Image 1 (cartoon, helix red, strand yellow):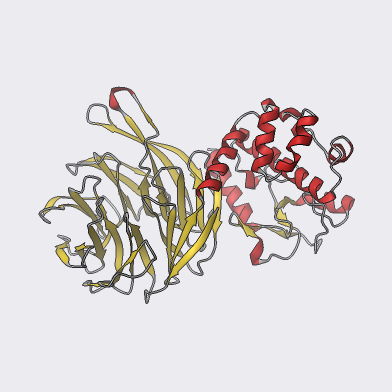
Image 2: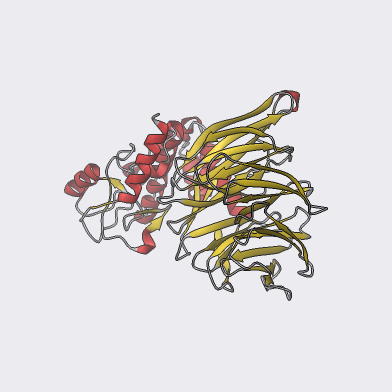
Length: 491
């Protein structure tokens, strides 16, 4: 569904930020430079790298048209560049002279916001390059900034964990403690959740921070009814501070990058994990989706930028499957079961299931014996695969109905794990969804796995294959994630 198609390794130090226009990719680094690449073949443009800043470049962003690039630096400046020829258009100095950590264009390109280490935030006129308004947060430095899709307000995030909302006149509309530790990034989904009465629109806002969490908020604002920010959910997955988050252009996916060196892609609607990418060798500091193609860029302290490509057909198929799982599976028709079989690459069994009138209720009751005796599936491997898929379906359905992430549920007991274990020595190739798994691809509740091994010898509960070891090793990473989820959802 997603594959690594290119790695850029031109920077001489940590990559701090990456940003897309419709035709270009920009990256910036501690090495004081900004680099520009063509999306056609990822070759660097002739006028790249862009050089002016005398210290680290922390953030870069394109204007909505893509003709102007902004960059900001520890040197206290925000610089505007012509992307076609690399010419410097303006140097805008933060009034306080403080290091500038983040910059962002408004959706209509009229304004540019810059946030600094001393907590000051400036709105610049992007046409005249002159200061328009200036404000500051109560405590901490600014590390995050995002404009609402309609441009009527923008949000900043501080090192103290506060989200602050400003209108287009730089009036503070709202401020609240969003993360226990500092906020590192925030981003709006460009697609409204819904349209309400009196033209009221609701938008998703994602924030992430040093507390290892990614949080989803629902935001609404009109000049008549005012501003409202409501907490919606916390996404689990990372086991270390989360440094970056970004929505895809269509709002269907959210990506996050972490100190744990992983990149996680979530389905925005179900909030399930679609992919965990682990190719970076140091902290993942930035991530960005392209506006018009299924491309994702991730940057790291390993000095590289990875370019990932999503497959549209399989991505849509995954979303259809998740949508089906939302339904009450016992109510599936025979046609629904056939659709599910095709999605699991088991289309050769559609005829057999139809012949035996297998609907959703019958599907969930199938066993190893009924697959062999009633459905006459002779191949042991095929029976094991079908049974494994059915077990996965039961687990996912249970997690969706209970709200528990499916990776937190034991495949044996189908209950939330309290003491997850792996059944053999961990190997790097068994890291999936950010958690270390057994050699058969699963983690289990310790007591359930001990009982299984004592009764069933050394076979996998999910594949029936012999496990290379009967030694049970605590899965501490997964246990920490489960505990964080419980703390959030049992308040």
